[in-house]
Length: 57
Length: 174
Image 1 (tube, rainbow over the protein chains, first blue to last red):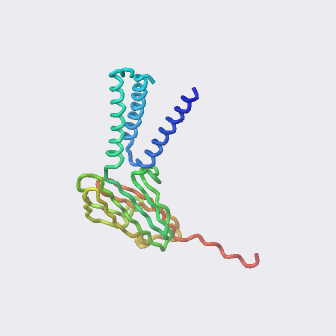
Image 2: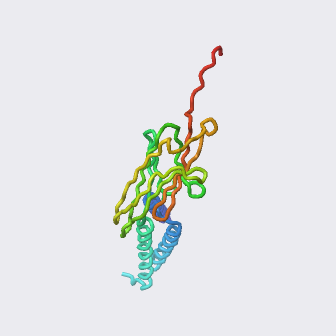
Image 3: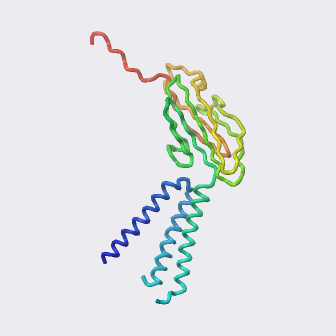
């Protein structure tokens, strides 16, 4: 159980790090661009979750 | 080794497709385009206004540039970055306005910028450009600098104070 909590923290840190870098360096995104990125990020994590589930994680 | 379901690869492909799409949005929407930046230099201080970066923006899309005290000139440096695959050209006009009346034309020239190139245009706003003011009535006035290029209008509010802040002289006998 402990290892899953650590994995959870690791994933959260990765996501927040990528988000921070995106905000710092990609400053000129339009409103529609931001919305599309949000939808795609959500989709990416959903599909990644489904992939990990299918391979038996 | 356990056999992996084929649909797993479909999900992996969709994950990668989303990732690539995000990178494409970053490049096309976040980097490509024509971007302009204004540097305002006054009394050795430099202020930067990135028009696409939503800094210092006020209601109605106007930016506040600060305040200058009468007698001092203001140097403006306007940088245009053309991050597109085509030539960017147009008429750049910069003018000074107050209450809907144009006071002076500061810049009026044709600009041509090559692919992924940039150009810098400079102008000075001197006290004489503000026109005649009744100093006794108008000590503190706001002006608007309008920059027109490539179909976009940038408006910057500039405060102009006629008198500096002075410490009152001590009254004798007190």
